Image (cartoon, rainbow, N blue to C red):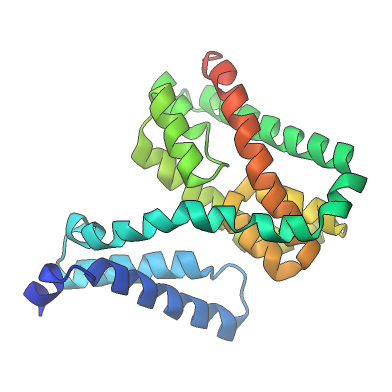
Length: 230
């Protein structure tokens, strides 16, 4: 059985999709925000690989095919934004200020954490692009001399944390404005945050889509500056 799975070119893809569907089913049945399908799927895949004694490289040979869909999937997020174009024009100044503030706070939080935990420059620049999409984050990390694998992990964690705890945070701080929710999720938690925003509502989803694109552009512009701080 193990040999059959290893030799199958579709093994990684099938395992990823099945694990995600199981995660989505569990999330739907329990209704718990903390049980993100991506987190659950990751746990299922890890357990499966450990139990079957299949190494990660073998799994990733097939699963890596899914990464090719990241860019077109991100581009598709522009559709809800286009549908809410008038709202964007009406609140343009507030939206841009909100996204810029989010990007700066994200970068400054990494600066503060690096100082507190005495992180070296390599780890510092590795964590700087944690709140942008994977495609942008990986490129930025490589350009700055960071560790791509760690950057990817940081991006995944940032996305999942935002998706899992967004509604709880909104309730605690009594954030009710749809535009604010969408911008916060898209800026802090990129695609995963925007996916959560779309679950909450159309306006939130549209603003999340906008935040991903604008935050990505701004991050690429300001990262070289922050990278020289430490």
